[in-house]
Structures are given as structure tokens and as C-alpha cells.
Length: 301
Image (cartoon, rainbow, N blue to C red; front, side, top):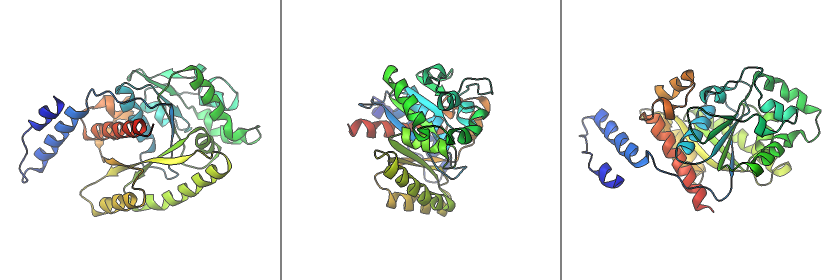
């Protein structure tokens, strides 16, 4: 039925690029909206990381999480960035008095006691970050098993709460917070901005992942790469995309996320683009990315 409905939309002429875009987006929306995604055989824990800032890391984490949750999956987002941008985008309070991931990491508080339901998206829960997390890097240095504190808290939580996906949003640096995220995760999900400098940061990130793999978490691997801020009008975006796909043919998702005003606007309203403007090109791209991520997880079982 979906296929027939999408096929019934007339093709626009080559001289009307805007109409072509609208027709293509309408077909995508028909094929994707309301579709239930397959559950993974076991909980997938993905660490969303990139040491370079401004690549769409937090934006990717919250929008993919929202898209998965809207498609019938149970999702937990762990905000591990002291700036708390993921908490903001998901409409969760994260002022200094709020119980947060800091309490779990430093004080040993159960993760279940700090998890908050996302009001805008059913099936989506959040572990918020507060500014206290900025001091956690220093406080963790002297603690026993400092690299595994998030992993232990998360495993205890998952043993008692059915969860399909966990997405951990990291700060843009390789400190103890990011190391905790790498130890807790089985997979690394890397958003890459389609610009030249993004490739330079990627090589260093891969070296650091290999170090974590060698010494702390032998199961860690890069499973997913998503190209973000793609601008089809520029040759540079196409060149970066081609180069990344050549080097990582198995990991790069077919979908790329275009530059979108709606995606940028959504956090200021305490929402993801999935609820702010579900019909926008950015929302459709993240829904496609989430669909591909879920399909890969089901097929690899």
C-alpha cells in the first residue's frame, strides 16, 4: 500500500528542482512515517563520539534516539556532556539541583534514580547532565575503577529495565568522561561533518578507539558512521562523502543529513526535529538513518 501510494506521486520536471525535492520528500515520508522498526536481539549500546566539536554529534544522538523511539523501540539517552545540550534538546531539566549522571558516576547512585521520561517522545528516557559534570573529570582521577563506573551503573540498570537502544552522548574531548563512554559501549557511532577538517579529526579518533580497545574494552568497534551537514550544492561535501565511503564502506549509512534550519531551531524549543517539524528534510533524514541503523542491528543477529 505504501509503495503504491508513493509511486502515485507524479514526477516533477528537471526544470523545477524545488518540485523535485518536494516530491522526493513526500515519497520518503509515506514510506517511513508510522513504520515500526525491528528490535535488536540484545540491547545495543552506542557511544556517539567525535573529538571535533560542531559536527552534529549531540544533534545526531537526540534525533536518532527520538526516531527510534517513535518507531516503537525503547531508547535511553545518556547525556555525558557537561554542557547538557542533549538534555536541553529532549526537554529535560538539567539545572544544578537535578539528579544527574554526575550522581551515578561520582556518588555511585543507581542510574534508575536519575532517569527521566522524555515528555515529547514516548519510549524515550534520558539520564540528564548538569554543570556538576564539569568537575567530574578531576574527581574521578583518584577513584577506584574510574574508567568503568558508567559501565557498571549502566549494566545494573539494563538488568532491570528492558531497553533496545542506549545512546551515550560524549563531550568533544578524550577525557575520563569519554573513556567511560567507550568502556560502557559496544559500538561507536561517529557523526562526520562533510568538511575537510572533519577527516583530520577522524584519524585521531580512530587511534584513540584502538587504544581503548587494546586496554579497556576489547569488544569496542566502529559500527556506524553518519555524514552530517551535507550540502549537495558544493563539491567539497561530495568529495568528503566519497572519501569517507571509500575508507569505511561497511560503516557509513546510505543516508546523509542535509544542512537544515529546522534541525538547528528545534533545541531552542526543547524539542528534537522529529517532533518540532516531522515533515522537514532533516527529520526525514534522521528517520531514514534510524531505520537503517535498526535494520542493520536486526540483520546482524
